[in-house]
Image (tube, rainbow, N blue to C red):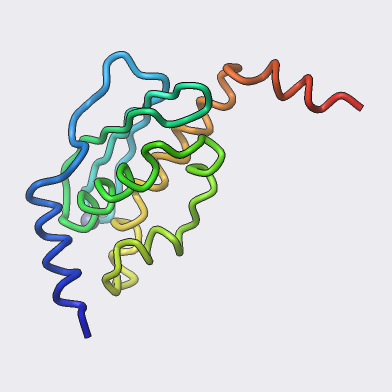
Length: 138
Ligand code: ZN
C-alpha cells in the first residue's frame, strides 16, 4: 500500500503548508477550533464574480488538521462558491488519502467546516441576494 507516501505528504504539507497566511481585505473569513485536539483553523477568501479567486489559511494544531486545511485551499482556489460549498466530507477525506482514525476525523474536517461557514456567511451577507431573488420569480 502507498499509505506511507500519503503520510509523508501530510507531514511535509504540515511543515511547509501552501496558501498559509491571511488576506486583508477579504470577502469572507471564518475561524473555528476543534477542542478535542486543540486545533485552530482560519480561512480567508477573496471572491470575484462568484469564484474563489484567492484562498488562504492560518492555524495551529496537529499535522492532519493543518495539512488538510492547506490541501483544501488548493482544492477550492479557482472554484465557484457553489462548487466549493458542495465539497463533501468524503471528498475531503479522499483527498487526504490517509486512513483517518475516528478520533482524528474532526481534525481532518476542521478546514472544510470553517470553509463552509465562511461561504455560508458570504452567501447570507446579501452579496448575491439580488440575483437569487430575481431568479426565484414565479
Ligand atoms: Zn488534530
